[in-house]
Amino acid sequence: MSVPLSAPLSVVIRDATEEDMAAVQAIYAFYVARTAASFEEEPPSVDEVIRRRAEVLERGLPYLVAEERGEVLGYTYAGPWRSRSAYRYTVEDSIYVAPFVTRRGIGKALLGRLIDRCVALGYRQMIAVIGDSANQGSIGLHRALGFRQEGVLRGVGLKFGRWVDVVIMHRVLGGDDRPLPDGGVAPPLPPMPGNASSR
Ligand SMILES: CC(C)(COP(=O)(O)OP(=O)(O)OC[C@H]1O[C@@H](n2cnc3c(N)ncnc32)[C@H](O)[C@@H]1OP(=O)(O)O)[C@@H](O)C(=O)NCCC(=O)NCCS
Image (cartoon, rainbow, N blue to C red):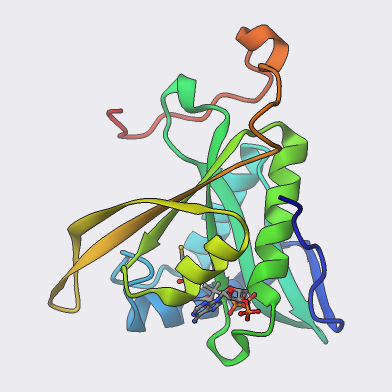
């Protein structure tokens, strides 16, 4: 499936800078405080958001923003899906668009560009871990960009005094028929730093 690259005409999709992180923090804080899209319960500080971006860049992964007339209206980035080495061709996306500009095509343009960047880097699968099975915006956006819903983990989160589901969606990057990278032996991508993952 081809990925649309066009954003609304006045919107520019570009690599994020450290200066963008205050706007990114404000967008994310809105959704942390009011929705179950993220399972964080306290919005991180701007410094923490800067640290998280640096971690994404250290791994060579893309972190993008959508800007209109100098204002950051949304952002997206790719992170490792799991830390164990066999997962090294699989990434997870995160995407947030400011609440006052949703449904204008900004999410589609951001995620489309992220997918293209990850394909170009050699990644093979992208996974979306969507907070809340009522999150029609994220489910609809991912479906529109070729993700398939693979499952629902029922009640795995507790936020705002209710059990919250996680919806898992998945998309192949670059087509099913791509040959194995370098004969499937050499890892061309930097190893992901370890975390507490046990899978
Ligand atoms: C999910 C989110 C990023 C979508 O961004 P957006 O800019 O509103 O999305 P777009 O306008 O590009 O929508 C593209 C397509 O996605 C689907 N879509 C978007 N919002 C939808 C909704 N509320 N209900 C159903 N489908 C929706 C539609 O197919 C839409 O195309 P259309 O408008 O031509 O019908 C945005 O709603 C958001 O930030 N939500 C809160 C945070 C969140 O859930 N992030 C994801 C965490 S995994």
